Length: 208
Image 1 (cartoon, one colour):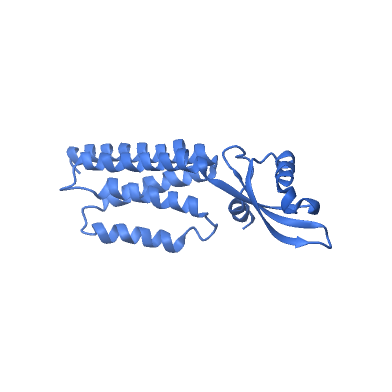
Image 2 (spheres, rainbow, N blue to C red):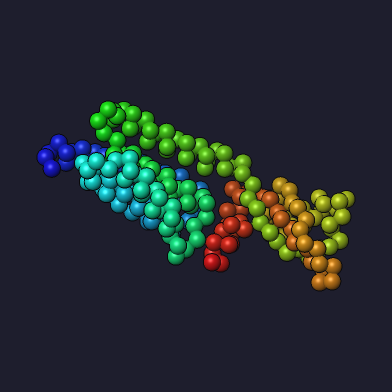
């Protein structure tokens, strides 16, 4: 590998690492607070980048890239269940790494820079703008059967907010057990206001 190739490798690696750190640390981590996936995403990005770049001279380009997606799609870290949101970030960092490592020849650096900027901007907008309006879902067991009457729904919402701290936008009534005196409510609340409350998907993830 001559000096030009080394400089190109260094430039592409710094670009890939900077984009990955921005997406994972400054967007994903700040939005979710999940530290456990940060190490995994950054190391997968680094591994995929070097793997693609160093094998890029072999005529495998498209097939090699698609093969990576197939492998991760089949494996999906079978030792643990990954929620769809985290799975999306996994494919995102793989895509960024593959693009930064394998796009050569007729693809200019300005096009690569624009693509990386588009990834960062889109991810930031989706997490910091669109997801701010997203309502999280939580199933709770509720013990006030007297408040399930339609005329008392606002009182029910006020009671849930007082007892849980959730800012409830709406709710749906699920199973009703008159004998035991409880009902199951599906509560939709503003996740950005109460980030310490786990959603149903996060509870399912931790219980597996």
